[in-house]
Image (cartoon, rainbow, N blue to C red):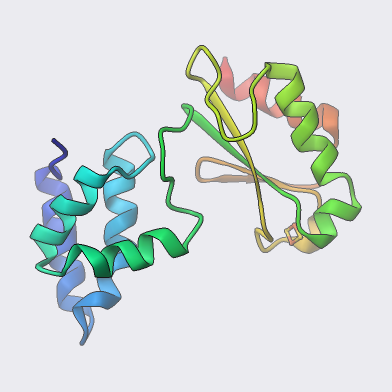
Length: 158
Ligand code: FES
């Protein structure tokens, strides 16, 4: 059963004081929960957060299911999000995502057998001028090629 840490509880309480409407604190609080739960959010997490924030689970679920940055199932130690929106797609983003999956033998939306990697395709990550790009956990990597993407990941996984 998921429970926020003392630090996490303090964070949520502080966020709740920052906005006129409590619901406005849901996004930062979901990020805190995700950080404390191996980078994904389970039903237990939602229930706990609803209790701590004193907000109905349905309200938290509305936000949780709308945004793709909240992971709905377990992800790898390195969660790779390859942008496949227009600028990145025109510059080989989809091929980079395929190349990463083929190199490490991981299927779309699944976690590699060793638990290290998961790879998904996402919409615009906000750096179209340096396409193609990917996000690995909280870091961004731009102007990628198939080779440089794999080199980057090999360095991270060392
Ligand atoms: S299309 Fe990839 S960053 Fe915008």
